[in-house]
Image 1 (tube, rainbow, N blue to C red):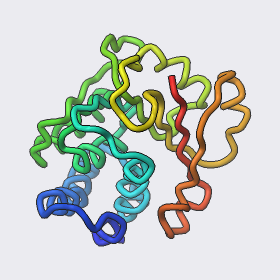
Image 2: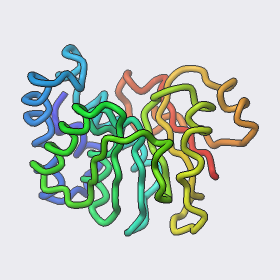
Image 3: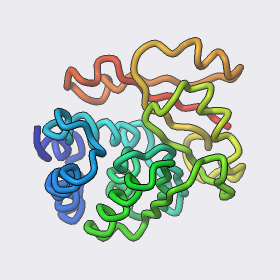
Image 4: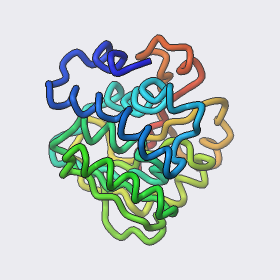
Length: 208
């Protein structure tokens, strides 16, 4: 699957955005030869399994200009890098506890000219700033993630949906939501995208 799958679902993209998305495959293929940030068998499915998966959040909501988004456990830069391309007027802070992955993220952001991306080798418990949203792709159980990141969410509301967590996760996680003792909105990604990969994938939005 190539970059056309992105323009299929996001026909409003500018030429600059399409160019940036098209450059993701060669950039990640090159970096993956040096540092394994995406599984070898998955690199051929980059646009569906990683880029489009990340952009499900852009179907769920449109971030207001100047929004601050923290991507926790970004790994190779997902969902933060695709979202930074999609929302050039927002600010993205991508963090991971593994330094070599952050090196790749910063190199990709630099190659694409993404001035709205800051990549940092840091644990979320050390983060002092406040953000409109904390985003992530299933780095741990949701209830554990909630406890780790809740101190990072700003009380100042600037978006159509409430500030909080936007989490990409598959499978059954009702017990994880229940353990937080809070309510959450759960949206199936299959309502946005047709590909079989998304059949069990969901977005969790928890207001904080």
